[in-house]
Amino acid sequence: MHIPAHSACKAIRDDIVSGVFERGSRLTEDLLARRYGVSRVPVREALRTLEAEGFVVTRRHAGAWVAEPTELEAADLLEVRMLLEPLGAARAARRRTEAHLKVLRGLVGLGRDRAGRGEVEELRPLDGWFHETLVQASGSPGLTALLTQLRYKIAWMYTVEPPARPMDSWAERGAIVDAVARRDADRARALAAQHVERAAAAHRLRRTDRPGDRTARRPAPRTGRVRTSKHSVHTAGARH
View 1 (tube, one colour):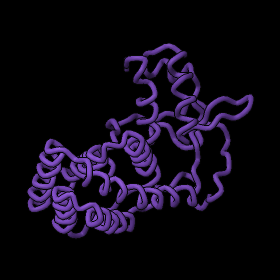
View 2 (tube, one colour):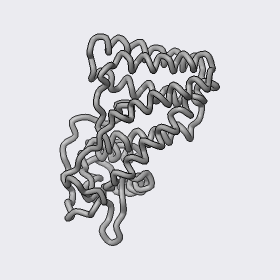
View 3 (cartoon, one colour):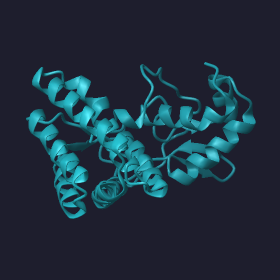
């Protein structure tokens, strides 16, 4: 695999989120440089960024390792998201453009159509794109960056059960868009809060190969342990 040097961080992050690099496994610069076809310099910079984001930890005299988040850390992420998503919806109601509305309505239309046909897997990317577009409509780059990072980490730590009534789920999104279109920030915030709270109940922690380990004990070194990635990860594919 050969990628541009500036894409090294995203490539490594995607492989961590999708499980190609298992939690607690060692990340060597040589291995990563060979895997992505780049020099060690962008790999080193990427590892620093991923450490700041919480995906990687650096151990003294032992290099970089994939982080092992605890259940408490995972629960905190969902709670933070339940605070930030409604804020984004309220700001979107105040700052959205007609272009944002067009995209949001188009996504809701596609979601309802595919939900009606029972195409559950097709709803996954639409769901992510809807939430990304909604926060982009907030006109807040900082909030957008925070929620993007949250979605990556939540996709890393959780699996999501498909909604039992997907048409209802997309009707909720449609109501949010209607409130945003009317510039009703209070209603947009309230509807988004209800939607995210319901979605959080469908999240299930991903299990590691050490069941019951809640304190993220360090395993024996698993240098260079890599599984084959079947697909790339994008935050638009994270279920909400």
